[in-house]
Length: 183
Image 1 (cartoon, rainbow, N blue to C red):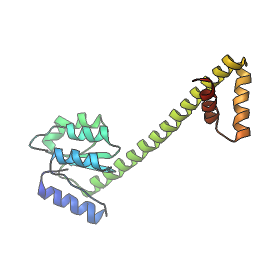
Image 2 (image 1 turned 135 degrees about the vertical axis):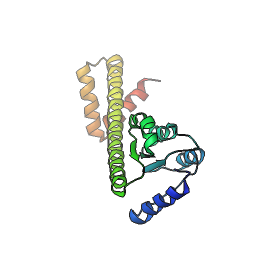
Image 3 (image 1 turned 90 degrees about the vertical axis):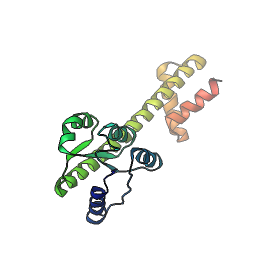
Image 4 (image 1 turned 30 degrees about the vertical axis):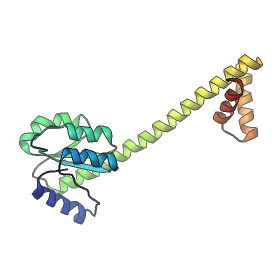
C-alpha cells in the first residue's frame, strides 16, 4: 500500500517483472483495509507515509488480522519513531531508499515467517482437536461409570473396543455414548 505513485510504480515493476509476483495496490488505508477484508494475501508491503501521517496502526492491523508477512518501508526520519513499535508485531522494517537485495531478503524472510506461522497454526488445530477428543472420551467414560456401573478402566477398555470393532474413532464412539445417555 502506498500513496506515492513514483515509488509505487518502481515497486510494482520490481515485484511484477523481476520477481514475477501477482500484485494488488491500495492508495489509502481505507481501500487497503477493504482489500484485506475481501482477499487473502501472502505478503503486504506498506510504503510510508500513509494518508499524510506516519501512524503505524495500518501495518499493525495487517499483522494482527492476516497471516501475511508484513513489510514496512520507512524513510530514515520515520524509522526512529516507528520501527520498535512495528517490530513488536513481527513487521519487517526497511529503510528507504530500498536496495533490491535487501527487499528480496525481507520478502523471503516474510514468506518463511508466514509459512512457519501457518505450520504452527495447523499443529495448534490438531492439538485442540486432540484435547476435544480426550474431553469427549472422558465424559463418555464417566457416563458409562454412572449409568452402567463400570470402573474407569472398564469404561476405557469398552470405548477402545467399540472403536476397534466398529472401525470408528474414539471420538465418534464417545459422541454416540453421550447421545444415548445424555438427553
